[in-house]
Amino acid sequence: MIKKLNKYLEKFKELPTPFYFYDLDVLRNTLDIIKDESEKYGIKIHYAIKANSNPRILQLISLYGFGADCVSMNEIERAISTGFKPKEVFFAGVGKADKEIVSALDAQIGCFNCESVAEIEVINSIAKNHASVADIALRINPNIEAHTHKYITTGIEESKFGINIQDLKDVVSLISKLENIKLKGIHFHVGSQIDRMSVFTELCKKINELQKWFSSQNIKLQIINAGGGLGIDYENPEKMPEFQQYFSLLNKLVDFNNDQELHAEPGRSVVAQCGSLISKVLYIKKGVNTCFVIIDAGMTDLIRPALYQAVHKIENLSSDGKIFRYDIVGPICESSDTFAKDTELNETSRGDIIAIRSAGAYGEVMASRYNLRDLPYSVFSDDI
Ligand code: LLP
Image (tube, rainbow, N blue to C red):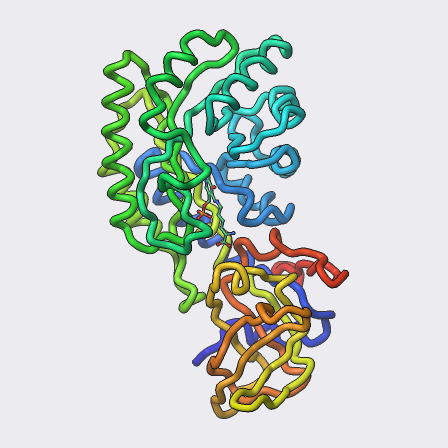
């Protein structure tokens, strides 16, 4: 097997571990493809900042002219300071705090994606005090099973996200009475790491049904936002996500006309494959029936395996020796601090450099200081 990161091995050995390594050529290549494939159909991209909000990554993404999907005031500020246009910044999330709504109005963002009646009322009253009118989209819960991990399933009835379809009539009648709210569109997000295109097909059908309903109420929708969720192949870190298939499906199946905009909010698929968590082997420890590789990165640096039982491909960049089976674990005082169980790795020794692949999304952004550990830092291919 060719390990693509091997060309950086000598450099990695000199740097203190653990750190996130971002291959900006991979990111540029991904962004080129997203731009080409989405522009073919006039689909507008709002990158979901939560997947990776590293300023350097955001500066690169904003150069492509994409908008930003944000879920906190700090994300909005970060997006604007790294080059995203305020009008192309959308504010989502079930729990927008009053001060965040005020700051978002001050920043003149493009749209609030609203998730409840209570929130719409609050935004209306804050906008009134602010002497402005807030453009909003309704995030609708379409009740579609995303067939992904339950913690990243967001569009079924028991999810806290979105407005239920049965409540839409009341919501629309409320909005017609509010003077500081303008309804611009509808928004959906059924989940993340979705690897079945049939889920998006089902979503498109639901979008069309709902559009018909809004038309029947004489409501014109300018924005149709299909959310994010396109999955990546964690087993093959070199593999590009299925952008072509995804955008052509959205274009083919969603009914939209010339005065409407079709939006997508990819996060993971934009940044996952460009990032790896680089770590060093501290110890090899023999268990009863296992052999542990204890590395200096832990669940504080990458929580996805502990939280979602995610499996990231792991490579020993220092060894091309015989293949053995190991449990790869971190130094944190939790048994869930395990990156892989009974996994194949070239024969491993203390000091070897380990790469945990496909970690560019929901990696660095979810790092914590549990055990009072330092936060991981980042290294970019352009700089080394
Ligand atoms: N739009 C909305 C409203 C979202 O909530 C999300 C992600 C996205 C777009 C982007 O979805 P993506 O294209 O990245 O699937 N920490 C978890 C993932 C949480 C996703 C939350 N929402 C993980 O590590 O798998």
